[in-house]
Length: 287
Image 1 (cartoon, one colour):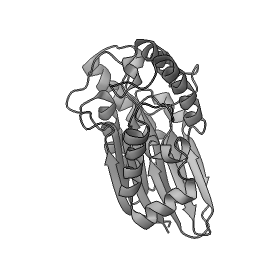
Image 2 (spheres, rainbow, N blue to C red):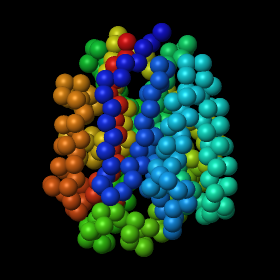
Image 3 (cartoon, helix red, strand yellow):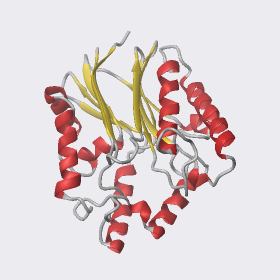
């Protein structure tokens, strides 16, 4: 049986005065990160978590840690979580516009009798470095980073920067555009499937078998850390994993925050919707 050994975990909110909307978890058969998407509703509906995005991330992470074992039917686990989340949210919030429905990205490594696989929804990422030096990137949305950067560039050009709030959603025109895109998520008309309130999402899981070349080291992370590769260009997959393995996660997080808050706080060099995003990672070995 393939064995996952957790080396280190770290999760850091994008802003100290806002809820961290990322969660992570693991058991003997899996390691995963759940990244709650920034809410686009007019108010928070689920109390006690700081935001509805944090609620859905917590809701999903607790159940994944319990249910995603070596014998789990992965599709049914995701379908069940989505069904339970839908019932819980609607019981509390009632009928709301789809742009206000909470949802999250997922990246997971899962071990079963058939081997190791990547499971994904949305833009969270697994970087995997094989023993022979070959590196692989696994994500459900390989074009998400380029598409979001292009859209954020239009926002930056129009308003002149991210702004003092640190988030583009405070601009009415950009918020309306984001809401239109959010309403298409988890529908046949959209191109993005996320973990949230739609049970049919389970039928659109990205699942990829991973063929190991000996042992391996991996990073399972939210898109916040992936920006070091996809947006800021400081690493490729192999060098990111190597530095994490050599020095731990803290130096990578510090480098990320330095770029966001000191080098380019207004998104003029690296266009994005937020100054700093929630960032979560699991460093693990696979043997």
